[in-house]
Length: 134
Image 1 (cartoon, rainbow, N blue to C red):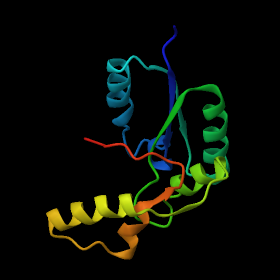
Image 2 (image 1 turned 45 degrees about the vertical axis):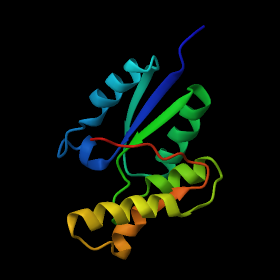
Image 3 (image 1 turned 90 degrees about the vertical axis):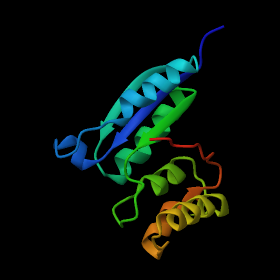
């Protein structure tokens, strides 16, 4: 029996320009290895909707799991969730489970869950939320 496979898409012009260093690939590779999932490909792409949608679509055809990193913050240029939804022809909106996670987090930190931050609770209907300990 062969192990499941995975790919990672690192998204962001700031990564490609060198302004920001990606720290997620090393962490993800270790966690996947612990779970006997073989990380087969990591692709770094720009904040371009067509590039993101195309990469998600192609990699989901080739691998068991596809992980994305970047482009999921509270600003207008954080478009990853919308592109993932488009790649799977899926509906996207604020999901109650994601909203609760954000509400709990911001309540703990004493900050407001405003409309910009609530954008981070926009999740494709078919997506599964996983805990991010980083």
